[in-house]
Amino acid sequence: MPPWLALLALLPAGCAMGTQPEPRPPGGYAALRFTRDVELPGALGNAWLFPAGTVLVGDRRRQADDELLYCGSMTIYNLRTETRPTCLIRRGDTVYINADQLRVGFERRLPTGVLEEMRQ
Image 1 (cartoon, rainbow, N blue to C red):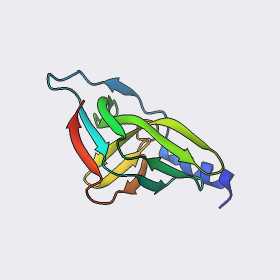
Image 2 (cartoon, rainbow, N blue to C red):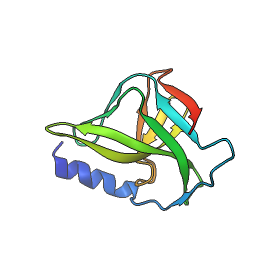
Image 3 (cartoon, helix red, strand yellow):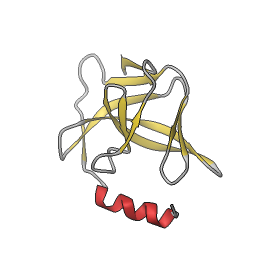
Image 4 (tube, rainbow, N blue to C red):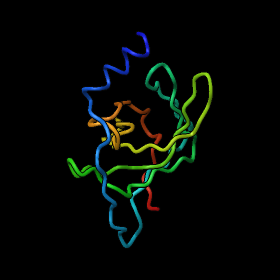
């Protein structure tokens, strides 16, 4: 699929979801830590990498549906490599990447057991 066609396919998904900060709970924010390297197919033919030890912190919510967002960074690579901020929603072993920017986010299934719940 040509890259411009893939971009057009994203338009109905919506963009730039509003977020609001989550008040800091007494025990710290809910967080997710990757226990091993996870590489997922990205958008437009690139790949997304969450290295082992990457922590995503649940410190904000989407205004549209009050969904908790776990935010941090991911590595994107194809012809070049760069680290970018991202927020995701977790539902079991399924995550919705860039859920702070898209109405749904990019749905990806994770291998079982790669996320550890913690407090940050």
